[in-house]
Length: 167
Length: 433
Image (cartoon, rainbow over all chains, first blue to last red; front, side, top):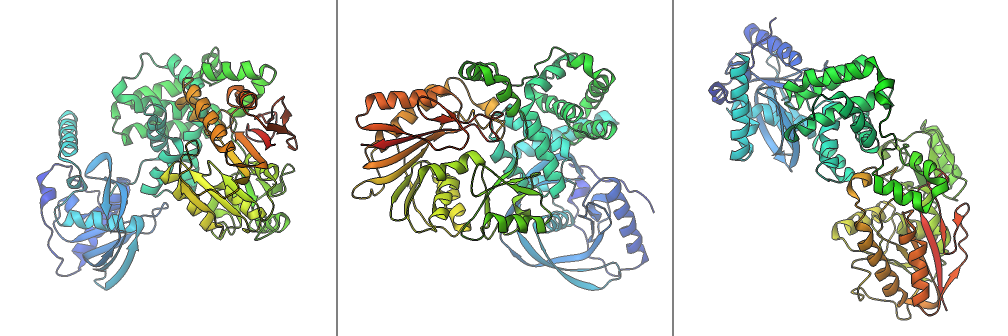
């Protein structure tokens, strides 16, 4: 197992659209393990493969306080969505920045688990927010895209500057 | 997706918005929790920190000043509040020292103020090295000067008691809905749910909880078994003495606690007009009554102006004016009053109160009774206001206020936090001859 490097906004690789996984095999299961470890290490509740520069439709999540209820979503699709909610979102690729984003209140999705079995999930509240946030990553989108141009520029500048000073 | 802000970072951000930016504590905290899902424990802790910093701001700010080599720049003020949150834990909570410091320091990172980690760490560790030395000569009263002076002028012999009580965490008080269960029945329901509670001697429907809890944890709350209301507010229903068949006006009714209490007493069988000046607050009034399955005629109206709502033909038997006021009697429940209220507000409030009295008096039946009350401890809003009203109004007569424990004044009665086991309220009963 290994802790992977998380890409930081505005890295252009975050704009890559992920491809569906063709077969859930051991290499995918290893990716899931590494991603889960990386997510825990970074104190995240969700991580998309895009964020670790692997452009396959793989998401890991864990919303529990105890950090012992990991979920895996491979090739997820949203079948139904309803309502609206606004939640302060933060992102491991946009460190230390939180802003409210409007999302569907409840969604029904279909995905594969790490054995390649198909399952359906009805989600609402934070779970629904997190799934939509991570699925955006697979489509090359970041939550910052929903904010005003002014805010986007400000965040960009700050993160670029910080990357430079950390080098 | 990243985890949300840790409790300290969240509390610092909220305190900064409330104290520096002038936002209301209630609204800021509740909208934050609407947009962020924290566990009930985290919510409770964040609230404790936010209320604590608001209560003890004067003291914490003075201690912070002795620790900081130079003040935090205005654009980084949130960092100042991180320090206050840290100091509040060390001075007023029994959080383990090292956990408290470490979590507070990491709040800087979460708030995107990485550079401040060393500053905060240094300040908190210096404080821990010699807490008593540093704490000397700081403002331990934690009230703006104009407030402590105004209270001292009004109640010199009770000043210290009042100020100390204003800084205490108030007990959580419930009003049992007697249409659904007796107080004894509800006490045993609470006991069954593992919630420690006792009857409030001052009121027939009141219950004190041993320690506060979320309303969602109260058995039957959604179904209307009980409401949250301080003893001092509950007493108004006893004083107003409404009987079936009477026409009643509650002139400044939102969020609706007193309207609901009067209706519960009369088994929802009287006609009550409930007014509030704010549309948004009228919505709260609706939801309060809906939850308790009560009904009133609700109008959005300014009760100090010519009536824009339909009056009963021969006037009202009872009028309740819970007047807009400085709120200086409920600082323990709303510590942000210390930061938001200005001494210059009192003039305007006095005028509004006088306008309400004069205007509504016209719509009181001969023989009818008006209850004027405030949650203030300032004579200008209370007994002096009423003395002036009586002097300029023919046929306005003071009658005895049968309050169980309040101080009797020449005009009306007063409770004081600290002296009485309730909020600081003023009540006066006036009868029309």
